[in-house]
Length: 265
Image (cartoon, rainbow, N blue to C red):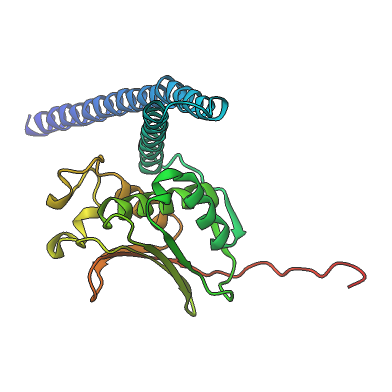
């Protein structure tokens, strides 16, 4: 009888175990379906009108050069805010895809100089309010990375620096090549990072106390870390001895492909 009872108990426990697994599987499926629905809504239902709004404002500025100054300023603000919201949506989409493992890196061997220039241009008027000093040595090697995602890193770091740098003060981008990696620094002349929060600021939706009166969702540094680490790199924040904040990230050098000389040369 004891053996029979033990067998029945084991069977019951096994059924409960498989029932629990089935319920967890159903919850994961429902969560994944909800995630996909939210991503689809962000990607189409939110991004599309934002793109249209930005395009309309930009077209108005280009086709109506004689707008009164107040109207031109309002139109520029409308365009800039639409672009800011669009970048926030892109950040949320990329973070969700990175966390779910569904974002495929489109890596190519390319120069940092090109992606830095494109990032500064993407920021538009925001970049014109702070001179950006770019210090990239000519001997920097080609790096293997996803250009679109790396532009997102630079845009987020620059936008973050612009928020805290005093009006008109420069923001600096510098890089140096080591034996195994290339290190990039983005520096500003603002108040710097809270010493006890330098690491936690890279957590999703985490914002420092000094940021409370400034716009943002607290995802910029988190998406930077996710992208850099997806490339096999590392990232961190600190303060400069002379004052101001510095975000430093490093990407592995790898082995670039050999460039074959063209015939006749």
